[in-house]
Length: 260
Length: 259
Image (spheres, each protein chain N blue to C red):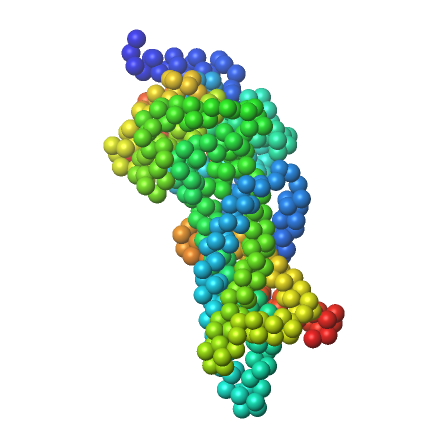
């Protein structure tokens, strides 16, 4: 009986949270189009969010490129198909591995950061102080962060993909003595707009989801410092889960329109 | 004239004036928890009114309803003859520019320096205050009144608890408010720093001629600063009067505050 009660209460909590998040999203869309616009703060957040993730995304991208090439090469060699390496690596990085892994790294860094920052601002009454100072805290803190995450992730993914391809080239150059020019001619002949455009569009949604979840968890943080930790942690978990759901939807839609 | 008569005369004087802030029959509940059950309050110009209550008695809820951070379930709040429930967002912001609020934990913005913390309300209330050209002068002036000019470029994390409270007080003063709301101004401070803050509050009141509503459970703070006091028990004004009257009360619930 108590197990059933526990399950019912969890389901109820889940749906309440989904409802609150829908309301929060609606509030975002209402505020994003109304004046005054916080351009200065938006630029500051873009710089913070983009700059804070740049090195991590670069290192991750580079390692993805290295590992993917190292692990795939022996199999392709068995079939005498090493020349397909640039095409295979570029398609898998641009279409799927780059956006998803970089978005996951971004979620770990940015969703938790936003969750903890806004959470601590909530529990120390800084958000209330902002409201008393004649500022709309939702617009100043939430709208700017969600927009910054939405705008920055696609740029980071493009950057990460480029680094990953360069990492892959280094291995190819070392093992197969392929020149830089030949490698990238093969890369660009393999990937088309049908690979780049859907992958880039979905990263805007990934960025939006990461910013939204981080802000939602932090802005509605309760229960003091314990709540701040919980907000940061659940922001990462929820954002990562949401990324996979969005990725599935994106691939499904891409399949309809671009015939993968 | 004795000290008691002096205090009584002050209390008598304020009662003949029109209140600058008035709360009537304020109710606020959170689910089944009825925090305020018809609370009333009048704050007069130039007065220091202390509201005392135990932790969780609804003092902070009351002060948040006052400033529009929470919505009351029932009752009216009038500040400078304006009913805050009828004000739109811009009107509420204009009114807030005339009210200073010292938060319990100082609430300084962690990501900004002391100077930026003080400039923030100036920039934000620009619509109400007009274009302020010399913000540095106003920042210096506010920091001078709390003796912290040297801390202007420090981050809040580099300040002690007492310094944070003083910077928060300077941020409150920068808009030259008519009313200052203090939410537990001495909580979390050691007795010496708490005394310094109380002295600072007194000197600020003299200098800026403000009316103050002070929420506290610190008896020393109430004794030193209050012209009049309200004891908040079970969500209502359980007792009202000057400090000495209440301190001498035989009522058990009132006596509990002064033990």
